[in-house]
Length: 268
Figure 1: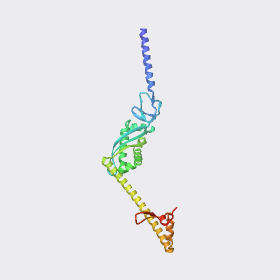
Figure 2: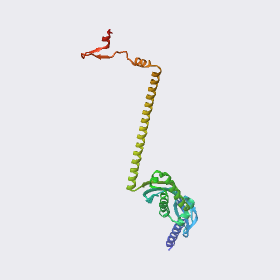
Figure 3: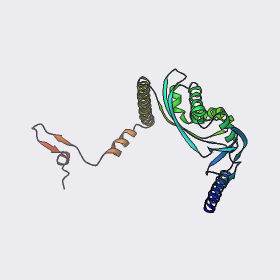
Figure 4: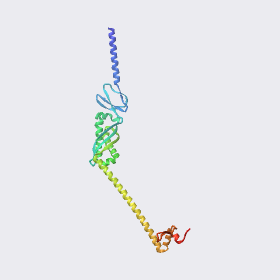
């Protein structure tokens, strides 16, 4: 009988110890790095959140949900229309994070699936709103500007939820085959037009050079004519100035080629 009582005490003591351990362990929770703990008391969300590390909570009354406040990335694709009614297929990537102070309200109003509930629809709506302001060609040439405007529109839509857009990247913009062919044809036409302009400029330069050369030759002739009018001996001056000192050869009546030096008897 005594042994039975002793065994009973041991069992009761062990149970009490286990209960105390369970209660003690339920008094604390660990919030992971880069997270905040959303506290719920009897299922109701508290305004104050727990910071990362070891935190106290009321056992069996309070529970804690961990909200990720680190930088997260979402990538989505879809279609939109340009100002000139071209269909654009896009792929975009967004880096964002949830403000610590907004964790409780975001969980209370949206839950943990805020990426698909809020962010993705907001991305799609922002893209459609901005691309409708630009022609398809402008979406190519002004890609950085378009990306900045989409980021601004997206930030405005989701900032009230405490979600901050860090980086917005347009991964790809694709257009129809017909549009791509039209762009290629336009580029070819522009290249041909540029070549034609360059050829025309070259022809104009060459023509101006010829005119300048002709004007110079005409001026030279005029100067010679003026000189002749003033001095008839100028012709003799030019003739002797250009003579190389050699007498020309002449052909005799019998087909024999004679040198003027032999005719004049001027031999060495």
